[in-house]
Length: 128
Image (cartoon, rainbow, N blue to C red):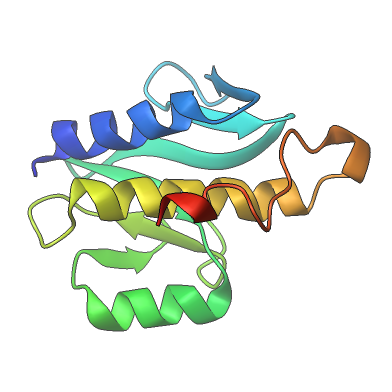
């Protein structure tokens, strides 16, 4: 999939997630998706390439980068906890959707219980 399709696929999944909001705190060129005020995904254009940047567990981040050339350390973020998805590789729409959901779950699990819109350890797992 190309960069526009990659970002569109990721955004479609993000919009489906409970309490997800789209904001522009870094200006109109950066789509930032948050849950209860905490960022779980953003879109960037780096050197003319559209990317999707997501939160990931450090162990998952390393495994994903080893397995997929189109997944690299997160652009402009903590390289252990964030990944960048690049267009034109082997990523499928299902995989992008799953990675967006996992990023969301990670952020939700860090919220106080009263602010969690879903139970993070169970949300989305029945879909697999």
